[in-house]
Image 1 (tube, helix red, strand yellow):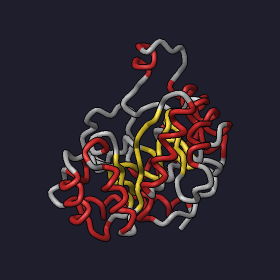
Image 2 (spheres, helix red, strand yellow):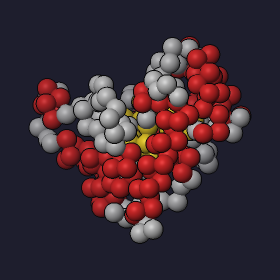
Image 3 (cartoon, rainbow, N blue to C red):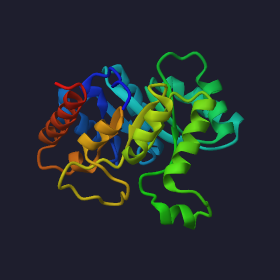
Length: 243
């Protein structure tokens, strides 16, 4: 694996606010307090106040992942990202399509904060899903193909399973950030994810940030769940440094 990126441990964990309302999201953030700093806002909250929530979290010193997964003609994505810049987010997702990525880069402009992440292959997909969608490639090759598109068209990073992270690191070094969903601590249910790994496995494979939701949100004590995940990540990082 390439040299580990220098990222604060607390910023490596992204907690998705996949709850029914902004009020419940605020309750989750308050419950986790200083144990977590990076939060993802996606489709569930976007239509019902997610934009305002993003601004509030940012104003309180939190980091915000705008998981909007834009995919449209470049001009439309450009306008969407130009609007999203106003939410003061740190990450935004765009499907790995050449025209969409070019539009996103143009819409982001010279904003120093918002990083564009290209979605490669959803972690809920496996090889059979690829076939069912009419594609004649392996999951691994499709992820690398879409990562190549991301790199060529100005993305700052990709969303990819840790199962492909090592190959991405080997090919692109530290040029791209790798954000990995589908991460489950040992013993946790896989739910609807298919290509899953543990936090330690993801870090060792080269992932920079891990998106972990239900094992935290559904835990009897979410703060303890976060601490356990942080400890596991820290161990893996120490192993990589030979500590």
